Every structure is written in structure tokens, then in C-alpha cells.
Image 1 (spheres, rainbow, N blue to C red):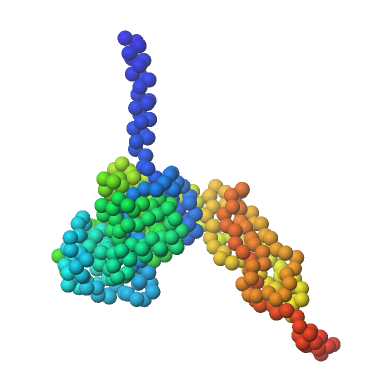
Image 2 (image 1 turned 90 degrees about the vertical axis):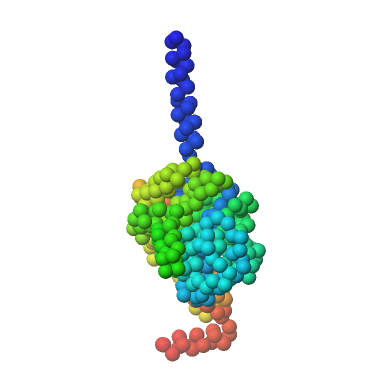
Length: 371
């Protein structure tokens, strides 16, 4: 009898650990949007089916049309036969129907509508196939090298895949698109003068303070997923959760990731003493030196527990003329402890022409006139 009791006691910890392990999502990533820095992750580079999260790239390409001025929210689109036979979530678009880009975006983002995605694909690229090529080309440009899209909507799509980190990169790009913000942060809306109701699966849109987007989805093949972004204290964070086992666990983890991002990290602009940035000597030039500046200097994300930064600057004793404006002269790096946060070039702020006989004579005459 005692043996049986002991046997059961030993089993319970194993069962508990198995349940705890099963409750973990397949992958997640937490990123700071302005820098793209990965703050926390689990299997963030694991390729996984994207499902309807593919619509984030479709929305991004629509956003680029809006930002370029080619479209605005009132631009009217005429629905073609491309919507015939569309399955899954739809807003019941019919061939010949006219709808504005703004209303079509409501259908795509709030209503997760596959027929809206089909219309956008054809209007932007001419055909569904060409649009998929554009999706993949843009993904590659953004640095999403572990991503492949096979459809504009992702519905019942077994060929598309991405990673939590790649989707985080996409969401960081979406965070700059103010033209899409109101759609991503709307939980409930209507089309056709109230005839069609839309409800966003991403309930964070009306329950999470500071929410800036983006999308929640689920299917048998992908599990429960969410890409959630929020802004607080001048910092934007993106939390990507893929393959959660249920609706509540995806929201709980996304909420915890965002909480960790804002409570544990701070965005700071690196500063360094101007004495390190003395002009660099130019040999053989019409000017004796040239000023330099940091190229692409941006904010840095550092732990609140240790915000100290160490600056390492590399500059030569001199450069030889001619020097072109924007030419790399040296580099500067910023460290938090032993962690490299940012390295960028130091470039010339102006042109310095090479000295010629004529310019040398002119320079000598100017000096004589001052005597």
C-alpha cells in the first residue's frame, strides 16, 4: 500500500510539468518598433504556417499606396470577378460593386475579409499571382528572409510560412503607417450604412490602453496567434505570439510581453561629448580639416536596471583630399555593458577639394592680404 502511494506522488510532478509544457506557445517575439531590437523571444526564428496573418502584408502594401498618394480613403474601387467563389470570412462583395478604399480596409483589417484581400491584390498588382510576388519581394526588402507568402489572404494556405521575428519586423514597419492606425485600433464597425457588421478578433483593440494594432487569428493549422502593438512613454513595442493552444493564452502572453517591454526597458537617444568629434585633419586639401557627424544615429533600447552606455569612437589622424560629403571617415559604437547596441559610420559633413597650384596661390594671397 505504501508503495502505491509513493508511486502516485512521484507521478504528479511529471503530469504537472507535461501540462505546463503543453500550455506554452510554439513561438513568440517581443520587439521595440523604432529600433527593431528583439527584447524577448522563444523559437522566434522557427518557420511556422502564417494563416490569415498574411493579411498584415496585404495591409502593408495598401498602406504604401496610401502613403504614396496614389490612393486615399475615398478612392473608389470596382469589384471584379476575382471575388467569385471566395470562401472563409467575407464581406459579401459582388462583381460590379463599388466600394471605397477606406471601407475595403475596414473589411480587410476589422472583418478579416478574404474577398477584400482579393480586390486589393488585383487593384495593386493586376492579378493575384503578381500580388503574391510583390508580397514576397517586399518581405525580402524588409529583411523577412524566413518568410514566404502564397496568397493575399492566407485562408486555407498550407504553403505560406513565416517566423515570430519576421512578423515582428513587418509589424514594426506597420507601426509607422498612420494611415492604417484607425483601422487596426477599431474593434467594431459597419459597412453599407450599417448593413454589414464587422467585429475585430483582436479584442485588444478596445481593451488594451495604448494599443496601436495589429491582428489576431486562429485556425486548425496555425493554432491561436496574435500580433499586438502598443505605445507607452514614447516607446512602441510589438508582441508576436504564434501557435498558442487557446484564445486566452495568446492574449495573456501578448499582454505579459508588452508589460515586460514597457516595465523593463527604456528608449534613449545616445549622447557623446563633442570633444570626441573634433575635425579630422585633411592633407592636400583646400581646407585643413573636415567636420564629421554620425550617420543614421537613432534611439537605443536599454534595460531600466542599467541605462549606462559606453561609447567607442574610431577616427583616423588624417585623411587625404579630395573628400566628398558623406564619405565614411570613421565609426562610432555604443555598448550597454558588453552588449553592442548600435554601430554607425562617421561621415564628412562637406566636400574638401584637393589643393591645386591655383588654389594654393589664392590661399597664399588671402593670407598676405590679412597681414
